[in-house]
Amino acid sequence: MAVIIWIKLMKAFVYEGNGKPELKEVQVPEPTSQNVISKVLACSICGTDIRIYANGSSKIEPPRIIGHEICAEIVHIGDSVRLNGFSVGQRVLIAPAIGCGECAPCRKGYTNLCTNLKTLGFQYDGGFAEIMEIPLQAFRMGNVIPVSEPLEVEDVILCEPVACAFNGQQLLKISPDDTVVIFGAGFIGCIHAELAGLKGVRNIIMVEFSGYRAEQAERTIPGISIIDPGKTEVVNKIMELTEGIGADVLITACSAGITHSQALQAAAHRGRISLFGGLPEPSSGYLDSNLIHYRELGVFGVHASTAEQNRKILGLVESGKLNLKKYISRIYSLDDINKAFEDIKTEPIFKAIVKP
Image: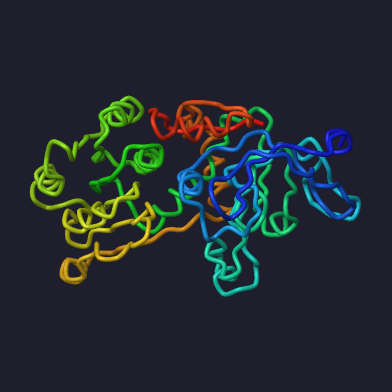
């Protein structure tokens, strides 16, 4: 509470609607009887943030503080706010895609597909700031998730992107006997491999052009096979490794349209394909509908994650089944946030987090 009263201005990374986001001083959210305010403990940089930094985004309502992979500590709860189980001093994760609770997708439990979806860092101010107001709708929808005391911020800050991968895999019905191919061995690709491994999958193939990323993936997830697309033709190699059958599950964990085409070509009959990595515009012309038709392929999209999926990932971290801290390559102060984005362009960083 004292932080909010004594400080009138704070630093935040703000997107104004043109050019790059800028680190600037803005007004601290004012504590009232009807709001909840938190101190940001950490906010990690994801691929979406990188695209915003490079190209902006028409999906953001400016001016907006960006950043949506957030761990925070509640520092103010208004007298008129009624929250069950939350108190000042409590650490929380916030699932950033906040549904309305009333539309058809929300009523079916698909709050991430809400027709009136509002997201931290897009329609609500996000976590690249010292202080943030937590929307009351996030509490109403269960998107604010308590973090148990033994866990450190670094243990849990990556739960949200992992929940997005978990969302994608729920559609794929992965079983232990499946051969799983993952295009991209960055953080998201490795997380997909880990989640598949938790389901008992033994045959995991990763396609990665970067030698450093391939080495990182092999160290992080023992037992995987790596295909270097710079040295071999990807589809032929997958068919060779699967004795001409093709892969049961293929996940495009990168933003390259060619991987969509390769995934279809390398899929076994009745294979399942997750187009996880979104593409820059234009994004058409990569899928052969006859392959989908005659091989009876399932092709799935994925968008964000639900609060419940975030809780399940936090549970895997709490139980020790997932160690996410190992993926944090670098920690930056908010003052150095521009350096963080520039470093990601040129250095082998799995995940960078910002700690205001």
